[in-house]
Length: 237
Ligand code: 1GP
Image 1 (cartoon, rainbow, N blue to C red):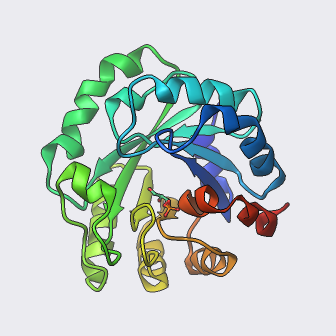
Image 2: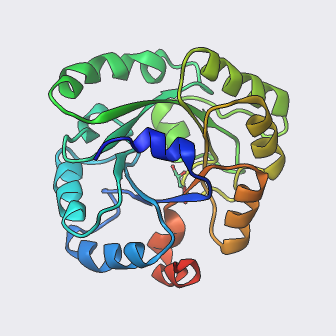
């Protein structure tokens, strides 16, 4: 599949269902993806903070059998790269100051990426404080940006765009108590010309609509579907 980025750029109110291979049983794929297909979801993201080697590859292959939706890797580590997906968010954790997550892992991934046809999408990944320590924070040993320091968040997003990054991902963290605020989304959206992705802690239709209303181009939801697949009912096409 070509043009995943172009699609993200041209459309609005997109929704990615995030599947964490670490928490998902491959045998449940067909049933789960059937619900995704009947919903307004436009993308499937696959990735997690801690995932066993090769699990992602097997899972992506299985998902592909059941959907036409683009499958985008959202990797927590180099080991989660598989050529079976369509694209990869090449995430640089620009809210933190850990060189390994700013550039180190990227260098290590090149040998793998060279042997794939994955569409590589450079993404400025900004972790924003959300009321509790998140997996991203623990794994990467970085601190999130303070949610009240909106100017700092906006400047970080703008710097990413000036560096040539193609997407901004505002992340509250998986299972966050509170999602990224509407004020943050709106201000970042005002400042950057690239698409803005928002994820973390979005659990109901109201929060999803609020994110879109503030300017999110694509919203990512994982935990809410993991905990209750009936949520798909509220998101039917
Ligand atoms: C996490 O942004 C994603 O990286 C989605 O978060 O699991 O809280 O929906 P949730």
